[in-house]
Length: 275
Image (cartoon, rainbow, N blue to C red; front, top):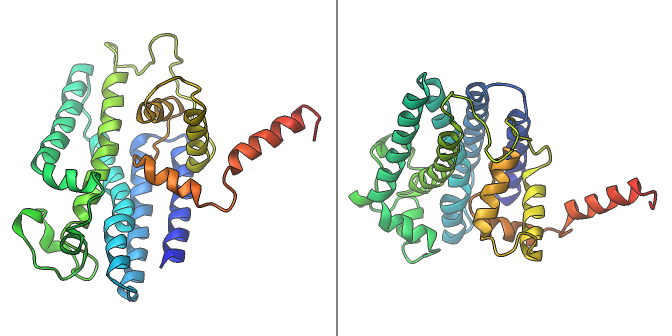
């Protein structure tokens, strides 16, 4: 299973980066990514329906981590598409519209605080109820359209996790859009920043490696890691994984621990004529 999901994630990451870097509108980007992710979810479902988990631990990991991470991106891009396609004209109306979207997320999260605390704290004592298929349903754990789910590809709470992760990304997106609106309806940066964002052209893993190295060396002082990540995402027009501890763990298990930093060093040495 790990090989299949890793290959699928790698393919998805590549496709999303290509679409995000293209010179097309956010409506077109979100639509194209949504279509691609829908197909990816269908591929994942077909695989899982023919796969037998080794044990409960593997099944829980899939429905608690693997599937929600993928589905959260689909939820996010679909929501961005709907937000942008229905976005009104006029600065004040846009601010009100985007703020209401943000309020909807806060209301959703407020109703599910107990579960959100459970998930974010890394608790696992209720994982068997939440993330194994065929468990007895408890009403407080269900989403409103739970009846539409395939019981062979769903658990009580995998969609809830995906929705929470998607809401994290949507909150960042909405706050950025609200902040960037000026009285003239033009998106700019204040304090001398250029009106057009520079887009990071490398992979997300490469940028994460770079940011973790800056944070480890204290390059920006005692800036909280989450704040540093949010700032760099905004500057370089890219959306990174919100789970920083998981991202760092992914870096640690690689055969070559710092491939991007090594590539930068070699490129600079070649430019200096020392390679």
